[in-house]
Length: 302
Image (cartoon, rainbow, N blue to C red):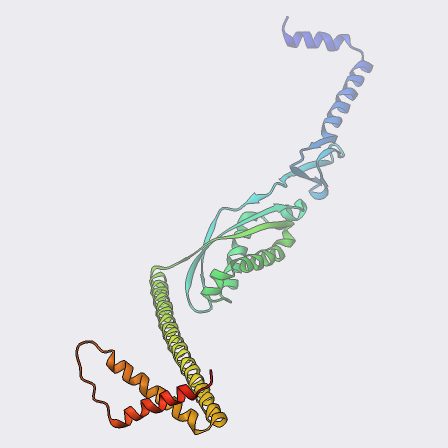
C-alpha cells in the first residue's frame, strides 16, 4: 500500500469532528510559534503590522500577534568600528595634510536607523570627512599637531550631533595619523634644523657670557682681597705711628732720638752681616749715634 492510499484510508475512517480538532491543534501550534519571539542579548527586532512600525522587541521572550505582526528587521546593537578612512584637509596656514580617522559607534534606536537612513556606514564616513575638513581648516598646522586631543573631542561632539537623528551613538572617534606631503616635510625639517642651530648659538653665547661674568667676579674678588690687605697694612702702620707718637708725647724728644738710634744700629748690623769681606766706613755722626744710643739704653729704666 502506498502512502497516498494510506492517507485516504486514514481520512475516510476519521469522523468530521476529529478532523476539526486536528486543524485547531495545528492552528494553535502555528500561532504559538509565530507569536513567541526570543530575541538575543546583542540584538533588537523591529516589528511591523501591515507595513507600519508596530514595536521594537528587546532581548528576551516577547509576544506578538500571529499572522498580523512580523519581525521585519533584526538589528545588532553591538559596537561597530568603521574602516580607517583617509581624507585630505587644508589648515588655516595653507598646509595640505592627509588625516587618517577611525570611528566607533552603536545603534541605540533601531527604528530610526532602519527607517531614516539606508547606508549607515557610508553616511557616517561622509559626515566624519566633512567635519574633519571643517575643523582642521580652522587650525594651523602646529595646533593640529599639538592639540590633537582637543580636535578629537570636537570632531566626536559634532559627529554625535549630526547622526543623532539616525538613532546612532558615536562611542569614540580617533585621529590615527596626520601625514604631510614631501615638500612640507622638507620645509619643516629645514625649520627644525635652523631652530636647533639657533638654540645651540644661544647656548654658546650664554656660556661665553657666563665665563666672562665669572672671570670678572674673580678679578673683583682678587682686587677686594688686595685692597683689604693694603688696608690692614695701613692700619698696622698707623698703629705703629700712633705708638711712636704716644711715646714722644709721654717721654719727650729723648724717646724719638732713642728710636732713631735703634734704627741706625739695626741698619749697620744688617750691612755688617753681609757675605764676603767688605769694609764699612762709618761717618763720625754714626759713632756719635752709637754713643747716644748706649747712653739712652743705660739711662732707660728696665
